[in-house]
Image (tube, rainbow, N blue to C red; front, side):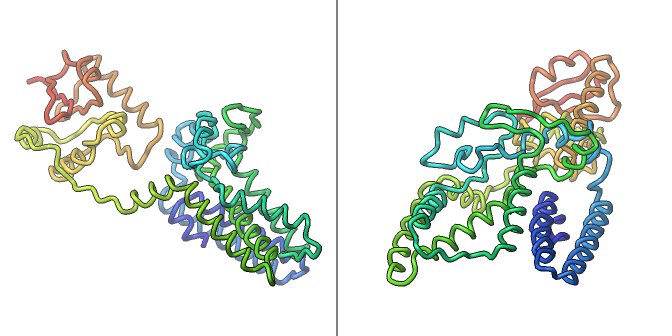
Length: 362
C-alpha cells in the first residue's frame, strides 16, 4: 500500500502511515508484542521502499523538494485544511452554497466536506443514543483509543502549521524551513484529514445501525433512504462535476495550421517559452506537438516542474532579451501581446494562429 500510494500521489504515503500507525497502537494496547514488532518491521521496510522509489524517480531532487526553490513550498499553507472544513464546502453544497466564500487564500482545502446527509445522520444518532436505554458499543475500549488517536493525528496533520477559521487567520506555528521542505514534498496536506473522515463515516453508520434494531429496523431503513437522498441532493454539483470530468471527451484540434510554422522549424532548434504561457493559453498542447514533431528542444517543461525556478530562469532570459542578447536559433513564445511588444525592437515579432512569437532579425 505504501508503494502504491507513492506511485499514485505522494500525499497517500502519510495517509497510509496514519492508518497503519493506528493498527500498531491497537496491537500495543492489546499486548500483542509479536504483532507490534512485525508491524514496526513492516513499516520500516515500507518506508525504505518508498524512499528508494522516491530517490530513483527524482522525488527528492533539488528543484522539487528543496526549500525556497520549490513551488509547493511557497504554497504549502494554501492546501492545508481549514478548521471549518467539516461543515463548510467551497462550492459543492446546495444547502451551504453561500458559505463557499468563507475561505481565505490560505487554508483553502474545503473539498473534504461531510455532506448534509452525513451531518444529519450524526445529529440524529446522537439524539437517539441520548434517550436509548441499552447502548451497544461498536468498539471496545482499546479499539476506541486507537481510533481516536488516529483521527486526532489525521486532523492535526491536515490543519498543519497555519490555523484558519474561514477567512480569519488564528495563528501560525513557526517551524523550520527544513521541516517545511519535507512537508512540501507531499504537497496537499489538507487531504490528510481523509482517515478521520473514514473513521467518522464508519462510526456513524455503525452507531446508526445499532439505534434501529428489532421492531424499529424498518424505521432505520426509511430514515437511511431519506438521508441518502438528502446527501445526494446536497452534493449534486460535486457528483455531476466528477461524472462530467470522468466522461469528458474532447476532440483534439491542431491550432497550428499556418505554413510558416514548417518554415520556422527548418531554421530554428530551440523554443524559449515563458511559464505564464502554459497557464494562460489553451494552445499549449499544439505547441508541444509541434516541438516534438520537428525535433526541437524547449527551455522550460512547465508541466513537469511547476516551481519558481522556472520563473527565475524565464525572468533572466527575458532580461537578456530586453538587453539585446538574442539566441541565434530560437523561437521566443510569449504569453500575451504586451510581453511581445516590449521586446519588439529586438526581434522579428508576429502573431501566427493566435500565438505571439518572435525570432532574431535577419
